[in-house]
Amino acid sequence: MSASVVVGVDGSSSSLEAVDVAAREARLRGTSLRVVYAFVWPMLKVPLGPSVMGSPEGGLRNLADKTAQDAVARARKVQPEVGVTYSVVPGAPVSVLTEESQDACLVVVGTRGLGGFTGLLVGSVGVHLAAHAACPVLVARGRKSPTGPVLLGVDGSEAGDEAVGWAFAEAARRETELVALHSWDNWTGLPVAVGPGVQVPSVYDPVKLRDEQERVLSLALSGWREKYPEVTVTSRLVQDYSRQALIEASEESQLIVVGARGRGGFMGLLLGSVSQAVLHHAHCPVAVVRVHREHGHGEGRGQGEGSGRSHGHEGGEGHEEERHRRGPWHGGGEGRRGRGVREGRGGSGEGGGNEEG
Image (cartoon, rainbow, N blue to C red):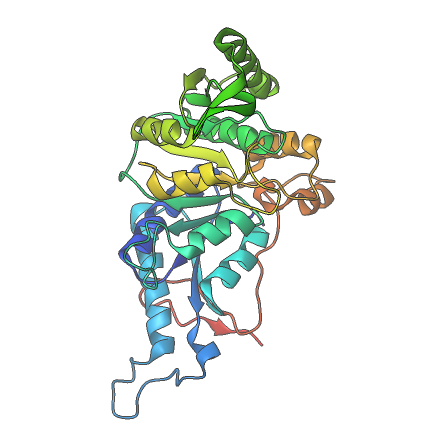
């Protein structure tokens, strides 16, 4: 069974928009969609069934089922050809969706859920998943039904190579152009203080710097161009701050792809400042692609290749071990079923699901 696209829902308008995006992603990959509702109330030791004096359809458990079933119905309406199931899983959204990512090819979430603070542009669930999920995470935000190229943020780091491969695969899947953007500035070397609060770069050679950054961009794309000859690539080198350049370019893009951390990230941070800024302010959906510790640089290139050719299909003989080692977003992996998970095929009249022991 091929790995599914997973979407987290909680009944908020943001999560319902994520369902639309997730259903489209499942169709593009030729795989199924798994709707997941994280049922936190059992952890709080509150009554889950209907009130004695209330309607038998009431209660937190029934509400959770109905929320998930409504999301399934919505997904089937926008993408009728996609197989959709749902699960009501006991636990907090962060832990539930992180666990679900182990067996998914992609996890999709909205910008903010019902538990989000008004001032936050991206909920804590999305930020946490982008930093910790075992597969790429797509945050549905920005314009509805965006069009344009796939936009890739290139930093030239070894860790960013995995995001480069994934972006090429997405451009091929969508049959659209890939815009690879790399930004630079005039600072190189350690800054030198020349006055109170005034610093200048120790080395200042704009021509040399630009030539070097062109080399970084070309090198980052070189191997992937040959793997995806059908993808038209536009290289864009801009002299600007990375976050600002990517946010502005996202206005004309259908998807932006970034790595979790770039060259400037501190080792203790799992999500870099540029990735966080894009998650909060981009004008289109954002995909964050992490590098996993067990993957070397060669594995990064393998991932991109697998992403472009294996999503939504069972692997052939001898590929099961490879999928297990690299991760299920390559097109393999059985769906995970935990204790207390409530499963269903969704839709009105089909719900209810089965309790697993």
